[in-house]
Image 1 (cartoon, rainbow, N blue to C red):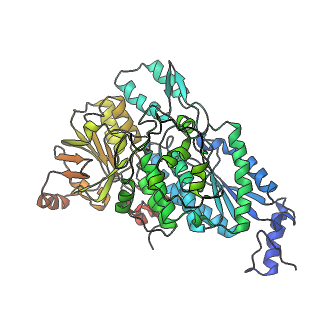
Image 2: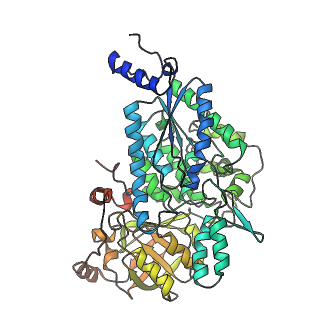
Length: 559
């Protein structure tokens, strides 16, 4: 039998095994001559129940056209894509674990079918990082494409996006808006398909893929429905065939230098606090050393030059009109490694040089007029967080950079939500939400609705919230998450009692409870874990997941 000269030619498999492969692919409609071409796996997160992914059903057709046109053979398969916004409360337990699960499902399919190159069609909070983990682990020719942004909703001259809907819960509870208005918001604020038009985790990761050179520039910040997106999809399909023939693998663009670029860019543009989890996981899969302290050192090098919904009035489409990621990268060029390669061709410097249009400096500030110094994140340490905690400093009112107040302790998200809905919260308090870490939840749920309710109730300048769980990438206000060690592992947060004084200082990177080490040691003996059952896959997850300071990895953790 003559061996194929291209495509899925597997020299380590004997001719009979190859014949079996060819026979089964023929059953799927592929011709023998198709299988002599590079076979491109198209990893599609399309589904009908997530607006960020619904548009990918149409977009994938243009990618396939590009692959065929360039002489490749596209082969599409799908992965799970849960929506953080829909998966609230107990459903949220499964969202962060899905990141590693998505990466593992891709790995199993790709290694089983041995695709020559890969296109990742993705959106949303855990799907983009999960696919980046898979690309890093598999190290095959890879390109990413996101669907573009959801259209914003306008009413009365005001532009609204998804985080405004969450904050309206608190506004309705506080009597600031009527039931009729609240119902109208629920029906209209998510105005179209596409990723939520804000700089939450989904778009932080989508823009990060651009910044490191694995996604075409402008892909995250254009509306999902424009013709440019279809053309971009064809370009991606054509380019992946070329990368595959040249054997240019994903780790070409997942280097220490490119990841540093991505970290600095995310920090300079007010990225999600969840980025701190995902970048560590991606780096691990790419065999690039990176811990939380090094992450902090890198991100502090740059000023914050842009902020987007919910931390400013500007949405993702505004970002695109201002010049998008290429414009913010060009602004940050003095800090970046600009000699790194870009998957669509050339180097980052060449792409920066190609940007001739003016940059809207009302949206993307220049380096002489930054919004904040020393990055958008603050990694906190102290006797409450010996292994670190994360806060999105650029989303906090400067009046709350330093806060000292009495603890009000809750052992679950449900408890704090009940308090916010049915009780009063005293100004000056620090709401402590524990047993929501990777093991304790389990699943490290995000406290997005409680955080948004604080804003809607007008408490963001007087009440802080701290947790061993997460906050949404869209959260703003004095919300400190990722406290490690978590309460389930008997971290100090498990020892806090109502009335204990909590000290938070974002400038000095401090998170402490004003108790002696002796008192904390005595209280540790009294710790009693609440009933937080783990069902199904979550039982295994609780056994093996690593702490948030290591990216909350489980299937791709340390060996």
